[in-house]
Amino acid sequence: MKLTIPEGYQSVLNVQQTEQAIKLIKDFFQENLAAELRLRRVTAPLFVKQGTGINDDLNGIERPVSFPMKDLNEEKAEIVQSLAKWKRMALADLKIEEGFGLYTDMNAIRPDEELTNIHSLYVDQWDWERVISREQRNLDFLKSIVRKIYSALVRTEFLLSEAFPVIKAELPEEITFIHTEELAAKYPDLTPFERETTEAKKHGAIFVIGIGGEMPNGEIHDGRAPDYDDWNTETVNGFKGLNGDIILWNNVLDRAFEISSMGIRVDKAALLEQLKIRNAEDRKEMLWHKKLLNGELPLTIGGGIGQSRLCMYFLRKAHIGEIQSSIWPDAMIEQCKAAGIDLL
Image (cartoon, rainbow, N blue to C red; front, side, top):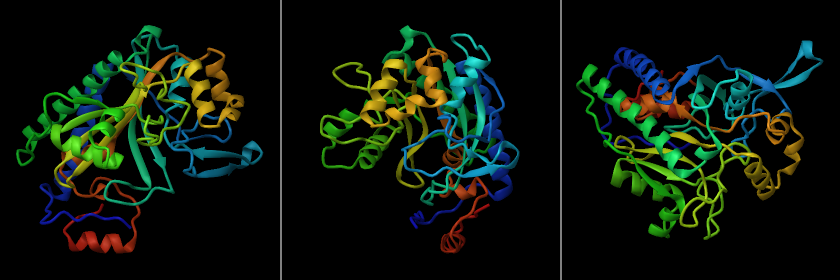
């Protein structure tokens, strides 16, 4: 069990105020996100059929929750781990045009998650996806979308600080972009997480580009599945990757704090190359992958933005259990109670 108790921690809002603030954040942010990116809200599944390739494999080692379906000849369904690939199929099915997209509330169960201040068995996020052109599959376009999302974050924090003056706005006006290879060159003796923490503390908000592919030093900054984000396409200065993470500096926990994973999605060429790199070419026979390889899915950009994570950051909470109701080890519950951390 990994639990951090910030010295002298005291929540700035009580439980009732916290619940009110959570609603304010979620309502305001999703409306601003939708307006910035031109997204329409859709309803999403809680589970999908096993073996179709639609579920998100995350790092490829996490076990999805599955169950047999009596009326479907005991075929198995899986609780989604995210909607990274489902959204692209939905864009095709709904015939959403270029320059527009969709977002939805994604709820997942991740039983292999290591329970910490910021990780829970229950994951809730806004999953979003937008149709793009072939010409927009570039780094400049990726950065423009990141800036739009970040502007929605800044506005949400300001609104919250007006409604609850005890919460002071901390986000910088601009987000800083940096590639994983640049981080490795600046801090060769640090781990990838330590690099993120050092850079996030320096700038307040960063977008780390190129997560998933192997760097020249042989490291992989962090895991990424081979069949949604494009982490292998060469961009500028020999760097690779059209994806990344939005990371904020968390003053309460004194660490880097990821709130979004996103990127331009694989096209046919990138999918084939990344499946080859990860020795996962057998996936080409799955339903979702066949659709992409046959040209039945649009080119897209998309990602997920953690709902509880975002509320945790804005409300200056020390534990994600102060935002969402989940299950925690008895020892963690006792330690949090003793430290004045109110788990819901």
